[in-house]
Length: 102
Image (cartoon, one colour):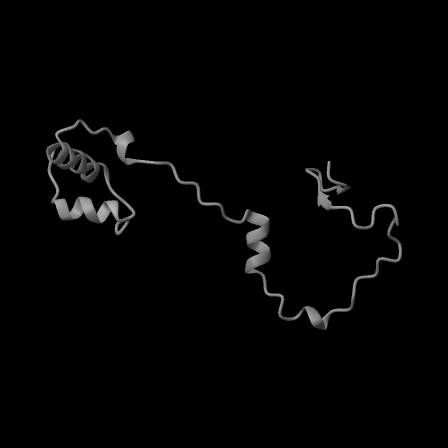
């Protein structure tokens, strides 16, 4: 295995570098083993990070252009079933309109 400078190890620990290839990871492990005198495994250095983000539908809404909405007439809900007003609406797998949270 190779070796990296102590400065590189400290930069990685401070989060100044976010991506590390496997060769660098091995070199960091070697350097840490030399510095500490203790064995180091990849599990000692890595942690899983999940970055939440908008799903595809939310991303489409966020990326959409709503600047001209005022140019359209309000939607006519006159034929709506009063018992379903306020219920969530979604499109089913066959294109059917599904009303309710199930």
